Length: 608
Image (cartoon, rainbow, N blue to C red; front, side, top):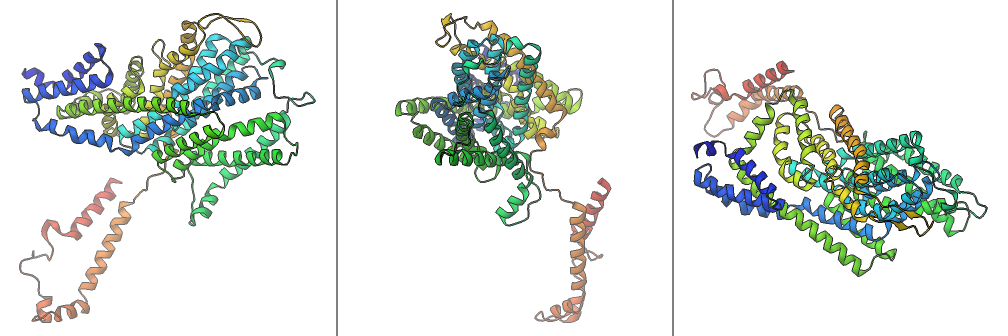
């Protein structure tokens, strides 16, 4: 028993693993392990019984956590947008834009996946929507089945890393950092990952063109009366919109200076991108609206369709991310505005009725309850684990690794990668991250960068064959039997599970390359964050010394004598006489403020 008491934390962690292997749900495994080892630890004298009295206050703290309100808001927004037909419209329109290119449909899926990720933040909604809409079209026109499956699953998982991602909210909560900072740090890596997906499809279009054929002419539905495609006017509108966006980004500091009434010298990159994108889109919307209102005939059907279809998701991006990055709203408030805007859009488009709204609310309630129960179980486990000095055991285990910070990061990411085979990001966020965060902080690792790095790694949990949740979502909507295509009349072969797994492997490797890139270049994340104020302690110390010297000179002058002479019953000689209780040197021993300040200023100078 003494051996168990001395090694209680490792035994407790092993007990949690046993509960999980027995097949109990994660929330109940965490809670059962926490309570079981909590009462056992009290009996063995590992910690006092008062530890369990802290549990109710911890649980009340979960319910009072305003940050976690963003989870149901973003979930509801994503589910409403899925049911309002926005994904269908986007895929149809963007597919027509890129269709004439080899790999155009795959590129359309990636871009739509990024737009849905930036508006919904829900992986399941993105994967299922694109699986239902785009997979039959890609199979109809001869796309490779493995590639089609991999592109749809991978683009759906962009909701894991592109803000407003649910995992980033949980990561910020567990690491004790701002959700807004976590969003800013993940903004550039998320779109870099999308760019890597695009490069992979472009490479396939060059070297394996038969796997990614272009749409045939008869499949291009947005044509002019004279048979032209309408790309010219679309290119002109895009050029004007892009020019306005670049001009706005270049002068963003001046815009802030005018808006805030004070000089602003630097604006974060993520804020520039979101605001400039919204400004450019607004100009395109104004052009398309004027053209339609006054029937000017300046725009083609394709250009008009693209402009009006892109407005709802981009408006949501501004309402959610724009307000957060501009500091107008907190992530919770941004999520509330996004959910409300999604409801309004759904009813205005007449795509949302009470039955669909009830389904969305029920799904949101289930997910929010799922998160809440996992948090209750994780809090119970972590309370007892901390009382048993578990964090110290984890710290000694990880800080002793060779290679310092790099060795720690490599081991942690390898561990997360393999754990992601069996646990999803909710479970990893609540079980593993609270153990790793304090160790990373003590090793001097920026926790925002660390959180984004883990989020990119956890993204592989959706793509791992054979346990990836995105693969399960896609399997649920992919055709399992032969069917006759309603457009072409061809017999379409089913998509097998092995084809889905095979298509996911290249994208898992791309995600691992992204993890390595973030480790090698942390500035990709930290460069987007607001710079911390740097205080020159030497200057502060010198200024304080000068102020004390000035006050000392002031006190030794005639004013001090006058002040002393004004004391009732005291003369000038009494005022000038030293206090007999004070040290002979006129100071206050080791507490002399002048002496202490001079010593601290000298120590700061020698340290630099």
